[in-house]
Image 1 (tube, rainbow, N blue to C red):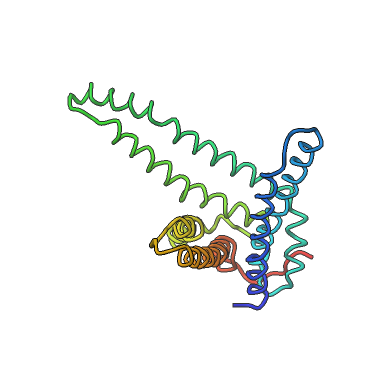
Image 2: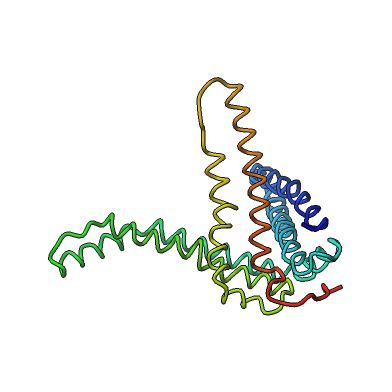
Length: 240
């Protein structure tokens, strides 16, 4: 692994923790006055911009890992408006998918009734709801990331980023690495292995948080490297 990649990985361990702390601070800002509302809006926008810039730099870094990190951050900063636009689109898309799941019972019930009527055998709404849920999860964890990640890599400057879609390793590796990035750390944090006193519980909590945090950053770097690395193209110079 290149020294620049290790430095960027270590930076992300700290910077993402700062983002989480900033988000908690942002949630605690009151809204009793116009000044507080303005502060909430401004700090929220700055937090989003910083987060997108931070992660955009990972994409620009893996475009040419051998170049200085400062160039990766400068390139990401110049392309920040497009990166933010994609981030807003992704957030809206995942919100819509979440809304669909939250309101899926009624369509599932209607579909089960229609199938029961036409097949002349009972079809449980729970079965239809499970099928809908699995379809949405496949879209969330497989289809959407497989399309959005190369798009971001292209904005970062990776030539022919959608050529990744011709690779079976990308279609397999992308959802697996995303599960390691998001789902596994979340489950690890929520897991309580035993109840043997406050001291052991606190030690377990800290250890699980540390492992989850390391896994999150490391697996995310692997996702970006898979989506925007150099496997499909010759060496090139990062834009100055």
